[in-house]
Amino acid sequence: MRTPTCLLGGAGIDDRVAHGHDADRFVEIGSLTKVFTGTVLARLAAEGAVGLDTPLEECVEEVPRGTGVTLRHLAEHTSGLPRLPAGPTGPPDDPYVDFTETALRETLRDLDRLTAGRLGEEEYSNLGYAVLGHALTTVTGRSYQQLVDTYVLLPLGVEAGAVTASPAAGQRLVPRGLFGRPRPLWTLTGPILPAGGMWSTCRTLAHILVALLIERRLGDPAPSWQRGPSIRWHNGATRGSSVVAAAHDDGRWILLHRLGDRARTDELARQTLLAAVPSPSPPAR
View 1 (cartoon, rainbow, N blue to C red):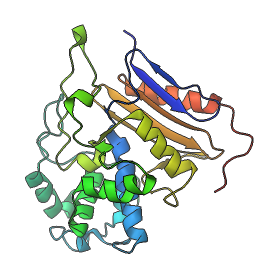
View 2 (view 1 turned 180 degrees about the vertical axis):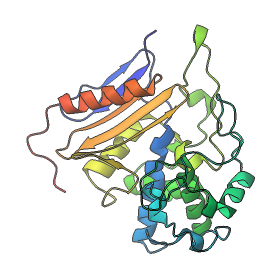
View 3 (view 1 turned 135 degrees about the horizontal axis):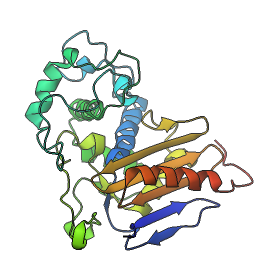
View 4 (view 1 turned 120 degrees about the vertical axis):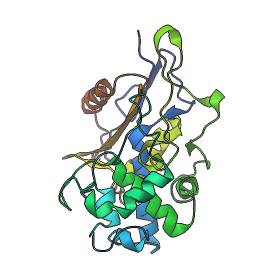
């Protein structure tokens, strides 16, 4: 079966929307959501509402004193927290359904006993980003959607709600299983939302990628971006939906979304970006 694919990119990359994909319908972006959470943090830090090195315990009263965990640790995956929430998980076809607000608060109270690694050592953590999102909404008194709208979308000239947890059903493009039936979606609208629950269109994501990584319209890229020798990138995946956003230091960029296997999406994005011919004059930084 051919995989619905949307490929958008800069110079040297031919845009392609194939096999039933649609660049203007909402798709799940999984952990690419973390880029929005990290950008909100960076913007709040720039205006002095919080500091990157503000201790988590100063933002959330349930957190025990003395953990040493800061907002930067959470954003950079160096908090020592495990990849997934502690306690019972949901079924394989809905792994975060049991990670409720109550479960989050229990996690916060036990934070000093939940470390999977040493503070300062990198350990990718969805739980860490759930905690970071909760800290930012607690400090500001705003919902996660309000933070994304105010600190990311509107400053970039993007309509509020263009990245959202709840697009209208008729605007969604969802993965399908046997006989073309839509696959059930994971429950990602609870505390796990800042780690991986948002939706957007590929066209909107491409615009945001260029604005954040190429044009640097909101300043230095947020600490949530993954960093290689010459590429900043982030990927995301849910059940049957996968995305990669990446930009090279020389100005090349790519946004690839597929309703298919995540590993293949990552490799296709890497190959396509590196094969593209860079622009003669890289953009000014």
